[in-house]
Amino acid sequence: MSYFGEHFWGDKNHGFEVLYHCVKQGPVATKELADFIRERANIEETYSKAMAKLSKLASNGTPMGTFAPLWEVFRVSSDKLALCHLE
Image 1 (cartoon, helix red, strand yellow):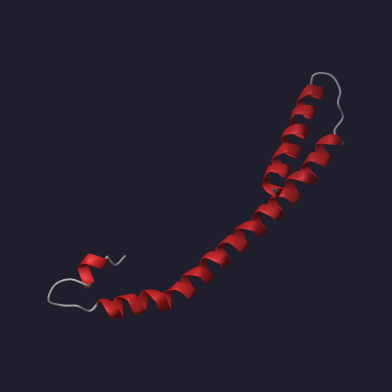
Image 2 (cartoon, helix red, strand yellow; image 1 turned 180 degrees about the vertical axis):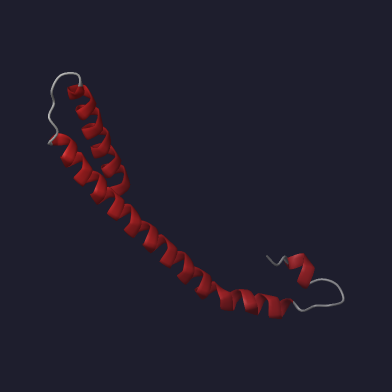
């Protein structure tokens, strides 16, 4: 990171070059950030779909005996997690 005081004051006033370099790097940095956010959104969407699919599997489980509450917890938590990652 370049600081204003380090380049525009004193004997070596090479601030224009520093400023020009920062301006030139702006679009590159913006594109890298946009690509990262886009990839993150794709990953979250894939994860959400997988959690929704898992939730459906939990709904198909046999709710017998002491496992019935456990299946319900898995189904509800998987549904909520899928929705959180979809938003």
